[in-house]
Image (tube, rainbow, N blue to C red):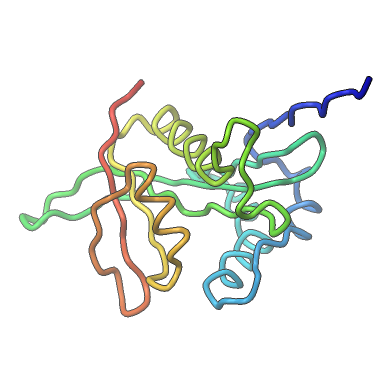
Length: 173
């Protein structure tokens, strides 16, 4: 009789200072400039932003058992309308998946990237209370743009020469 594989035990939680070593060693880049930029940010800056006082930045770490699988972050931002009034939104600042887990599907067929994105979205809505979410993605980052679109960030507008702002309006659950 063979014993079945144990289902992965994912835990998503707010990062603390104790996560410094695992974040500092986190690898998510496979080559392109935009992946190296995200990896550098996750390793060097994300936790520092959380530790800054006062901080409105929220960094989540997703572990499978004891291994860091992904990190994700959000913070409030104000979007300006044409009439110069502002609308409160939440910027999905970071979503990075370890190179060993990129492209991974869970036992039920769900993409790990979608699970992480949905965790980030739910946390952002619950924490911030605003239904408008945005993210800035490199135009060349086709996988991240597809993940955003699959998960409700479908409105696109040019951000600068290299990036696109994706946004969506979400109902509170």
